Every structure is written in structure tokens, then in C-alpha cells.
Picture 1 (cartoon, rainbow, N blue to C red):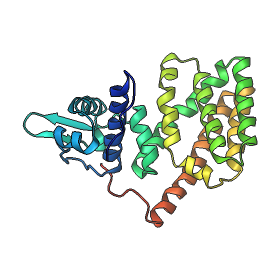
Picture 2: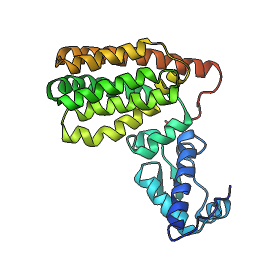
Picture 3: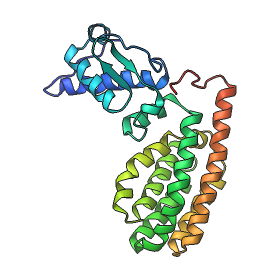
Length: 253
């Protein structure tokens, strides 16, 4: 693979991002398994058609994300999933590209169970009239876009982000991007793409309506039911993927 050069003063930064993406994706996909030694800087430079400086910068970024470790005289080796910065937007995005991963999905369901029901409960207490109106508008947009799986998923994620922001919790607001990126990595997106049942939209509407009427207990219970429902359906997507022989069985652990 040779990475084309980009014109202008930002060309090295552009090449650096492409190299980070290329190597990061190979590690997440399992092509470079845990403990595998990466090619040398010189070999990667030749393979990818970029300078050794670009390679060196990319390796530093991957190390900061927990994907690789460099040691004197032993080179750079890939690290297993337990070392990855799993909430890093790039790492999450690479998992989206790789496809459904049972371990990642199980972790995501647990995190959602910890955060989202309580967030919905708080949102029902703290959301402003404008935020409640926004949630209802997003709900209606999601239902209207149901025939377009990609558009429906985009609005779905925007709706969950709006609920998190409606908690008016500053720390949670800063975590929103990672949480929403993780949701985008979920097999739920594949489930929507396969034409999921209308019950998904109804489950979301129950959450939105509970927040809208200021019903904390109802919002929490509805969100718990929504997470349980989407977890079951997404689990079927993973099972179908395994049966079709398209699961990523060689991933790092």
C-alpha cells in the first residue's frame, strides 16, 4: 500500500492521520495480533510510501491510544484489547469499521445500563422546555426517517446525545461524544440497517414522552426497557454474522 501525498503545508499531518488509521485498523481487526511485532520504521516507510518521521509520529499516537508499545532493541509490538483506550473516538471508529464484536458489545451494554437509565431519569427532572421540545422533534424525525436506515440511525444517536446533555451534568456532557460513538459502533446500527421492527421507535417514544412530562421513574424504566430490547436484537445480528462466517474471530483480546 502506498499512501498518496497531500498538497500544501498540512500534507505531513494528513499523511500522519492516514498512517494512524491504517495501522490502527490492522490492529483492531486482528491482522497484527496482541504481541505481534510491527514492521520496522524503514519497512513501514517503504511499504506505505511515507517518510520515517511520519511513521514515528503515527506510532507515538497509537501508543497513546494503547494499541502499541515501543521498547528499545525489541521494536514496536501490538497490544491486546485490554490495553486499548476503548473510549478514544478513533479506536471506537475502527471497531465500527471492523464490525460486530461480542466482547465490545457486552461491555457497551453494561455501560449503557450504568449510565443511560439514570441519565434519562435526571433529564426528566432537569430538561428545559426547549430541550424537551428538541427531544420530541428528534423522535418525530427518527420515525419519519424509518425507511432510511442510515438517516434513522443518525437521528437515533442525536436523540441519545440530547438526553445526555439534558442532564446538565458537565462531566457527563464531556463524555457524550465517546458514548455516542460507542453506540454507533454497536450492532444496533446493523439491526436498523436490516430493517428493524417499529417497536424500536415505540420504545424510544416512551422514553421521550416520560422526559417530556417530567416523569423520572417512567423515563428510567423506559430507557431500561429500550436498552434491553435493542441488546436482544443486536445480539441476533451478531449471531447471524457468526453463522454467515463473517465474524472477526482473530481479534485481539
